[in-house]
Image 1: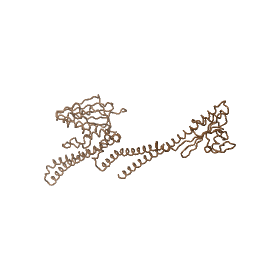
Image 2: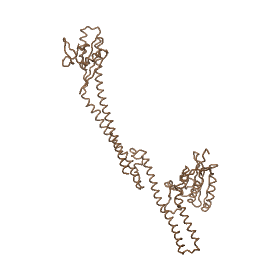
Image 3: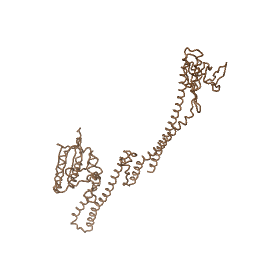
Image 4: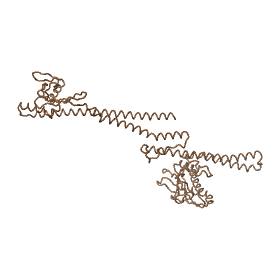
Length: 497
C-alpha cells in the first residue's frame, strides 16, 4: 500500500512538473516569436519607407517632360532637397556605372565608398554597384538591407524613367528602442502572465487533487477494516461552493462510495447481530440435546421415556439443520438452471398458495383479494423458486397485517409490456422510508430489539431468486391500504418459443 502511494505521488509530481515545464517552453517560444515578429515588422517598415520614397521620387524626376536641361537640373535639386524626400535619408542620382550626378548630400564624409575621377564622385562600393547592375538588368527597383547593432540600413535603387539613370535612397532606421519597447510591451507582461498561470495551475491542480486524496484516504481506512470512514460532505455536495473545484463526476463517486460504505457498515452490524442470534439459536438446542443425552445415558431418564426425548432431540436437530440450510442456500440462489425453466400459469400458482395459507388467513381474520388485470397470466422461469418468492412475500404480508386487516395481490404487466408485474399490498404498519431499501439485505431486521422469528434472510432470498431470473423487487407504501406494497416482476415466455 505504501509503495502504491509513493508511486501515485511520484506520478502526480512528474505530471505537474511536465505540465509546468511544457508551459514555460511554450511561453518561451511565443516570446521569441513575438520578438522576431516585432523585429521583422520594424525591418518591413523601414524597407517600405525606402521603397516608397524611391518609387515616388523617381516618378517625379521622370516627369520633367519638355523642360530644358537647366530647368531639369533646378527641378532635380529642388526635389532632392525638399523635406518630403530628404527627411527619408541620403539621396543620390547615378549613372549605370555608379557616377554620382546629383545628391542631397554635400559633405564628403557622408558619401558612400568611392573616389573622385574627373571632378565626379564615383561609387566603388561593390554592394551598391551590384544593386545598380541588377536594377539596370531587370529594369525595376531593387532593395538591399544591412542590419547593425542599433540600426538598420536600407538601400533602394530605382530606374528613373528612360533616362538611363538611377535613384539611390539610403535610409537609416533606428532600432535601439526595439528591445526597450519589446521588454515593456511584451516580455514583462508575458512573464507576469506566465508566472500567474503557473501559480494558478499548481493551485488548481492541488485543489482538484484534494477530493481524490480524500477518497483514497477513505479507501485505505476501509482496507484496514474501518467501515465508519466517510468522504467529507464538501466533496459530495455539488450545491456548495466546492462545485468550482470538484467535478460532478468526483462528487458522484464520493457519494456512491459513502453509500456503499454505509451499506457495508450496516451489513457488518447486522452480521454481528445475526451471528449473536445464530449462536444463541444453536446454543439453545445444543444445550437441550446435550442435557437430554446426558440424562438418558446416566439413567435419569428411564428407558421407557427414551422415545419421547429422542423425538425432542430430533426436533432440536431439525431446527439447527433449517438454520444452516437457510445460510448456505442464500449464496446460490442467483444461479438459474436453464433446463428447469418452463412456462407456468401464475393464476393457478397463486390459487394453490392462497389455499395453503388459508389457515393463517382465517386465524387472523384477514381478507385477501386477488386482482387480475391480465386475462391469462403465463410466466416463464423455475416454478419452484418463484413459487417460494410468492409464498415468502404473501406470508410476510400476513405476518405484519393486524387481525381483521386486508391484503391485496394485483397481477398486471409493466408499462413496456415485457414483464409480468405483481403488487402485494397490506394494511399493516408498513416500513419507514429510510428502511425500505434495507429490508432486502441479508440478516436485516426492521427492529433488531424485537425478538422477530426467522433469521432476516427471507426477503433477501426472494431478491436473489428474482435477480437470478433478471427481475427486480422494490418496497413502497400502499396508497389504498396504508401498509407495505411489495412490487416485483416476473419474466414472460420468450417470443421465439
